[in-house]
Length: 72
Image (cartoon, rainbow, N blue to C red):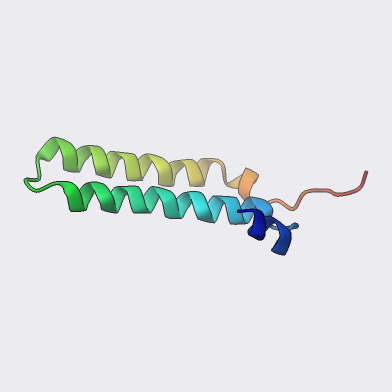
């Protein structure tokens, strides 16, 4: 993360959001891989969680696409 901050100081929020999205997707895949006997509740909870995360990206789109004003 520190390397990303040094390489992309202007786009740090984009790097953070991409990293967090990769983390969330990895956790979803880990849940799917670990479950030996799928149950409706587990599948539903995973899909509901993925839908909730995608909806937050849509609702909070104004926060993630902005360039910050660096005039001090």
